[in-house]
Structures are given as C-alpha cells and as structure tokens.
Amino acid sequence: MVLQIHRLSIHSKEGIMAQALSPLTGIFAEDRVYLDFGEHEGKSILEIADTNPEYYQYLLERKNNGMAYIRRAKDKNYRLYVSTTL
Image (tube, rainbow, N blue to C red; front, side, top):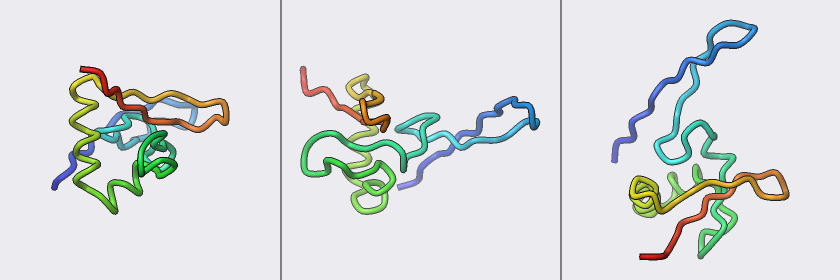
C-alpha cells in the first residue's frame, strides 16, 4: 500500500514551513488522533497504520465516503469517530 503525502505551505512569523498532510487526519498528526470505538479503542491512527494497514485502509474509505470525522474531546485529545448508519 502506498500512501500519498501532500504538502501544505503555512505562513508564520518565522517564514514558510512545510507540513505533511495525512490522507486520513488531514492537518492533524496521526499520532495525535485516537480511535474512540471497537477493539482498537485508544490506539493512535499512526499505530493502526503500522500494525493493521487493512483497517487503516477501511478507515480511509469511510472518511472518503463522508462517514468519519474527528472531534476534540474534553481531555483535549482528538478522537476519530466512524458512523455506522446506512
């Protein structure tokens, strides 16, 4: 499986910085977004990509179909949710 990484230029006081975009989490780093359901609950997206690429691909497909979203929880961590509705 080949993942495409897109580059985004961000203007700041220090100049222009390049930041890699995740195909699943966008501007959020994959090690900062955690699953909030199922057997992978509490695992980061980066950990899932490394240990279970098939499940990562499933999450990516759900996101591309508009069935996944990221929210910031009360503990200030980011959580990935997947809708199970038809």
